[in-house]
Picture (cartoon, rainbow, N blue to C red):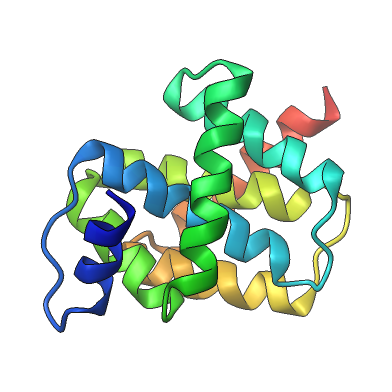
Length: 148
């Protein structure tokens, strides 16, 4: 499966992902945004696992395995645009708002926003086709949930 995903990303015109492949792309995107501020620690790993478990209804072991595959994929994927364009093809707009919400969840998990995280999130939102207003609303939902 991993080789298939890398082949799709390496092609000039990527094919649509099946749902399992889209999960790997999502995990890779979460890892990429978490690493963007130069800090990637156990707390962030656990947070990614929780986001993946919630989003895909996984148990903790399944979520951790998906994150590990996402880490490998992120390390080999050429750029963020390939992640987002493939997710965009596989995921309807309403669910892409949820993808942006998950990205905000990772960015805001440590209580700070770095310039690098903001830049990747803005780029990812744009290439996912999620407008600024909906991204802003997603951030507000995450901030409200993290306060409770």
